[in-house]
Length: 193
Image (cartoon, rainbow, N blue to C red; front, side):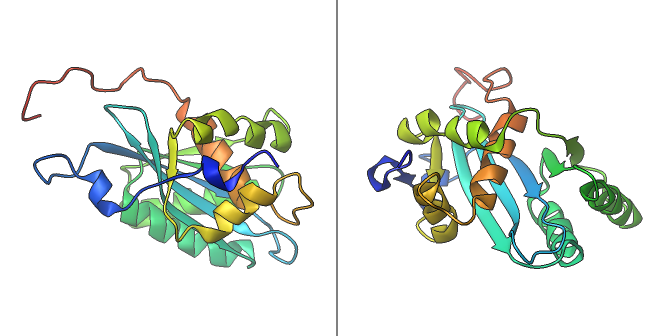
């Protein structure tokens, strides 16, 4: 197994507060791995909060359900409105493109334009994308909540006869979309910022 139980770093909500009890500056990113019918694969939506000061990714939400893409579209719309992502990516291979377009239309009808929606067509194999998470998970650069059981289970079973890897794929795509750069991180900020 690539992802072993002892590799995971967990957090709770109090870890997202600074020493003055204020929320740390998080940039929210989301990704939807679309399953067209939902009969075989899960529709998976990952929400990451990236600490602008350290670059650490906190998995804020990991939603997955075997449902058709229209049901997942409503969930994706709700998550965009709830988290007000900086960027929300949608996998757009073949029929999935229509869900990306529909999400754009639905949000614009609501007058919501804060989130940059991004059409994502994976350039590398899924296995390579998921494997690229291993050093980040091991170094504690991606942190999880214990209640993200399905995501953690799919990571632990990855390449060990796992039936599904939809949540790890969405996580890998979200991290890749974020660029894992420290370009716009806040460094050495004055006290009180």
